[in-house]
Length: 328
Length: 184
Image (tube, helix red, strand yellow):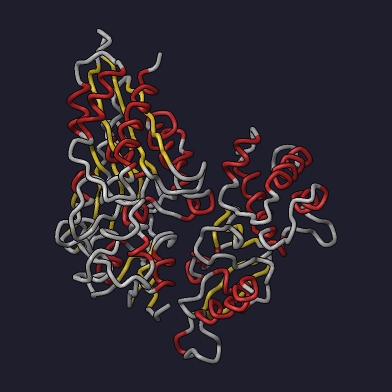
């Protein structure tokens, strides 16, 4: 590991001030960053430890909804009674991710900032990775790409975002609160993570000196049922090949009044499938409708050989998740 | 032999952690923490993980280095009662924390009920993953995710056992739970 200077931030403003120096990283639980520093993928000159900041509360917002401090640990969030009761989709997604030990360490803010697990990115032995070394090419494009993206990718990067929690947050339309040198701002969840385009080295729209302080969860969708369905290679402790966060609320007539569908494991960011949602609205729950929604979500999907299976897996996962949330 | 090569490669990983001879004393930072009930004051390089602090500086080699990437659970310790992977945690971030390792579970000659249950149920073969399995199981019993066999397996999924002693580990955890009345 390359030497670095360690600072324990006394306040969020203190953290932001130190982060104005180039090549500084915020340190949360460290479960991803420390690993990447060991392998040399990340080589910060300064770490600002933000885990002691007073950002570990979960508070109820006046209009309903919850404000989750960025330093709340993933396990704490999953077990909060208000989350279990009003946002079971989030609790389910959190508990589908990683292992109990990692969830005890990992922070909510860090979860948003975790990097892809694309092998060509995480192992510097591979020379080609535009995300790690901009301009070096993409090793996965014509390499071994079983875990890679089928939606929203570019020729420069077909990596996927690894988070489960973020797929639920996409479906819940969370808001990311950040603090920078000019004060606080809010970022819509859909605009927080980005597609790779020509600059896959940038995962998010966050500036280097902006610190995530909290995630706001809007009030729960009334009478909605939701499910996080995760398909993976092992029964536990494995990243998603494909995952689906599905949320459906039925109207008094039994037709779908609200629908949210977000996908994980398929794109460079948590993927909101608005096309699928439109196919569901005002329809009565039925397998045929769910298939139409799934087809709409995957209409622009593209495989690279090893990951072709993900397209059909995603369709079937969407159908199954929708069946589960609408089952009597 | 492949096995021999793998073992020989282990010191190379350990060499990534700076040895006390290679680092500038001025760059060491003072750290106070409580380990197995004892207050400890150490000076550490910022790069040192909690795992390497325990094993290399504090002569507590019970906590094992398996993958060193948070994927195997051999390095599991309890920090303020919660289990974490010590390999992915910088020592300096633990100022003031209360750390319990496998060495701190027994009370004198009396084994912790989870340790005793692992022996009674033969919850290991080679034993390398066992300290992590036991610390993880103690954490699990605190968390109370032990309602069914399936739940215990799911909540122990962060600890791999390449000998495949899983069914006896499950048996040991259930026995310890019964003995402890469901609480750690």
